[in-house]
Length: 289
Image (cartoon, rainbow, N blue to C red):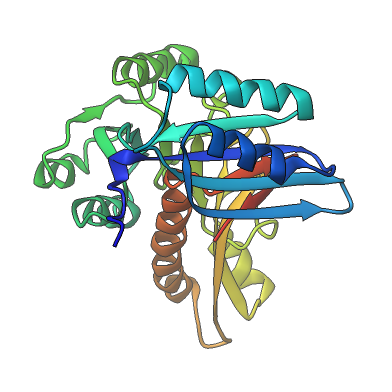
């Protein structure tokens, strides 16, 4: 019986390109020729946009060449088929920074899941514009940096960027971080910054969505995790969920119910990103199971 590979012996290949015949065969032949075994593969074709998407998880134990040579071979096939591709390796976990303000439910949930082994990453830093959640970070032994918001927002964000770059951060999580992100920071972490918004987008964008939902008398409220873009709450959606409310629910009830959704939706989105299951297409995403 073949022993399954450990996580450090695997890699994931994500590709997207114009749809045409021969794509799957070309990739399969390339991997076989380099001694790579396919553990699992999933693909999707968007017939309206004529685009092809694929995720391949690979066993590298019998790779005939080094990684640089392998990546060059993939790049040659990608150039031939006009593919955009990304390869990530299981022995290089993503480094994640969490940005928070005062709400603690999403932070606690992420830290607990990380300690339980549910989130394959490293969390070397937590950044906040308030000191309130320093004790929570201390419980998990993660360095906490409090950076109060300054009148000069550019100078304030420059301090955040300095911390993120110093820690070689791959992914930024906005766990109810109540500050608007500048276009410069959005661009720096394009498709690498995830926000949780406490409504079922595109409904009730901006501030106080539970108050908006109450005033509108909705029967369903939700939460949405999305990549951050310059347009507030308009980035590609990764994960969503909903729960029912009624005329008996006031704003406080919606907040209580919504916080459960926020925690779950954010952790799902973070997990699929860390597992390289997300491909962005315009302002939409393909999320592989």
